[in-house]
Amino acid sequence: MIRKALFLAAFMAFSLTAGAQINLYLGGNLQANYSWLRGDEATFQPGFGGGFSFAYWEHEYWFVKAGLNYSYKSSSILEYPDDYGIVPTSPDDRVHITFTEQSVGIPLTFYFRPYERGPNTLLIAGMMQVGVVVGLKESTEEYGELVLKGDQIKGRVKTNLGLGVGYQRQLDEHLFLNIIPSFNVDLRSVRAYNSITLTAELIFGIY
Image (tube, rainbow, N blue to C red; front, side, top):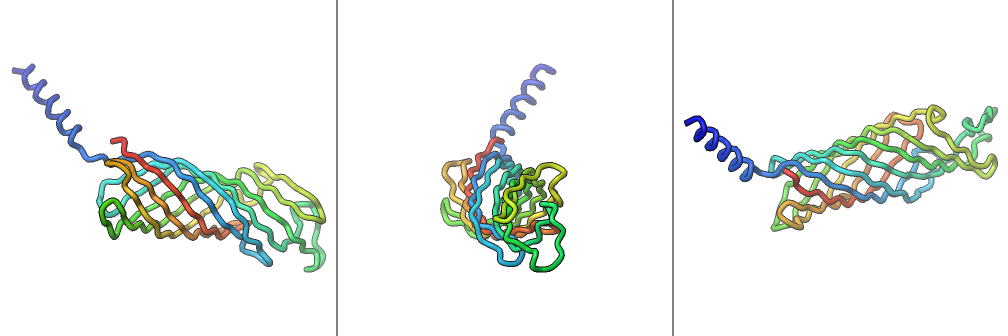
């Protein structure tokens, strides 16, 4: 009797697992960004990024994603050359400095699916990312190039918020392509960027 009960329990557990809805997804993304620093005489420059994703998708009309991202951004502004050890004495001491920044961050994104037609779905994305600047290069015609790492970088921790509207395409039963243009802003940062970012992301169900 016990043997039959164990066999029945194992069979039921297998049946439930086999019929369970897949709600965990893994994937990766590539990003292209067009960024500018918030400051005087800022320039708009292209950048790139990428990362991997972990999504939890249980409800039909929304899901949430986390992961790890890398980004490369660059822009020039009119700024005091403090990092070069130059003590400013007047507003005329400002020079054009190009900042090139590399960072890694942990994103948290909420996706909403308000409209679906066949394999095509409208996506609305709200994003927040906490990141750390891992490399910073400054260059100027007057003082040359300066590379900063680790504790040499002021304000290494950054928070970024973003909002995007894009498109999801179902490629297979558990394989999806997300394409999201978004507008992103840095908060509480020594070097605060605004960015227009295009993210192409592939996710596939694992369980």
